[in-house]
Image (cartoon, rainbow, N blue to C red; front, side, top):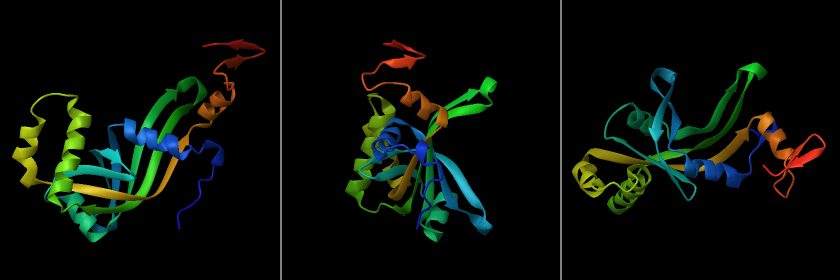
Length: 178
């Protein structure tokens, strides 16, 4: 159903892809938009147990698109280092495909909002009052992940291969502990 990645040497192990999703703070959600145009929009999110969650307004392009077609894609870029002298970019990213739906369970909605608050408020007080104030004016979208692919540039793959299992980096014929 989903394509295999063409450059398999650059495929990240699933646990590394999950770690990127857990660590990063924003991604781009791609939806089937109006008049058959794709609609891609950045969102702040939280990843939990094979699902992506984000909040949005009760009405708008995202909600309309999800109601029309629940199939979505979501991309998170962890690294994007431009290397002008090499005419390339050292990158690490994850792309997921899944189905999105609106959470209707109030307890589930509140639990996700707390997780979002934990991730983005960094312990600042007042998040509970903010959730209570906005609770009835926002939606929580859940994306059930059906397929996930993490990829990194070939240069990063090669860097890993020059590092021995002991954590030492091989430089030419010498070894560095850095």
